[in-house]
Length: 174
Image (cartoon, rainbow, N blue to C red):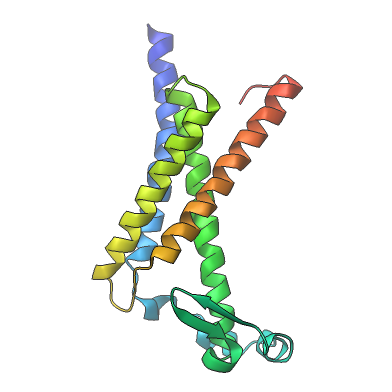
């Protein structure tokens, strides 16, 4: 009985707490006004700005119904766009990893079930996160960000799954 209680306690601290902390980090980042996260002043003073102007001046893409290009937005805003989108992918990759890890610990089903449930959870959280931005100054909720976040979560889920498979094949435990 004591051993079972200790396992639950370890699971709580090793699985639940990191997930809840990471969800809080995502929430707090979304609660910051755009001006607090503005990287353009810093990027404008970097050597990278000139490189981006020279090498990416012909690049143009459409994201969320808006044109993203050096010509239209400037080099600093162009770089900031990609930094922000990479941040979306990375923060949800970590979330997907943590959610799948917890799911695998508490639900004893096939990996596909964990993947689907984890991805669904992360997609819903991404949607709620974007809705939360309605109430944050200078932030705009976008369905394309929900899709990007969910893709990031899928990368995290697959990363955990593949790492777990490699560890199990080597004979160690996760």
